[in-house]
Image (tube, rainbow, N blue to C red; front, side):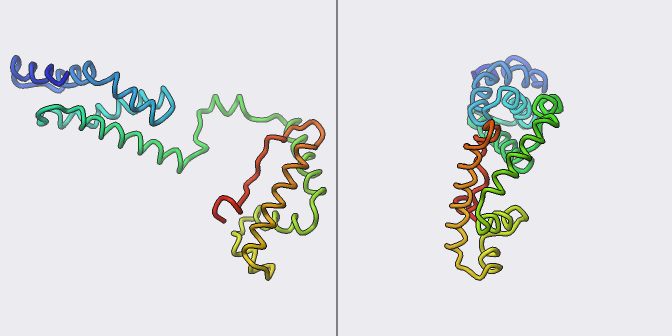
Length: 190
């Protein structure tokens, strides 16, 4: 539909920003929305990204010539990349109404604590020591230095400790936390 912009430029001079925006939206909104939905996996975020794309492009559209679709796609992809970066930097950013629905009650928290305590008590001392270092933020290299063992000993020990902890969780009463995977540092880069 880039021809519509060219038609507007032939029939009405000078082009106003409103004319350009109306034509941009009409000609490109659906394919930009599909692109943004594919990248962001969220309808609401995709619509926001499309609006941001149009807002960024509007000042330069009157100077563009030819097919502007590749330009719009590039801007939309950049807007989506910015949003994905923001999500990685702030993963806990959620709406307040989401927090209310997912915040566990005191009974659930107490049950989880009891389950974790039972799992912790069921682990051998060596596994508790390794996991304890990870919980307080030590990297695998730091744990190896602190314990005077090799890095491979620490990573295999952590892997074993996480596996045992998952088995104990699965076997725990009620299975409240059976789906918990833990933070297996030996596989995620220390």
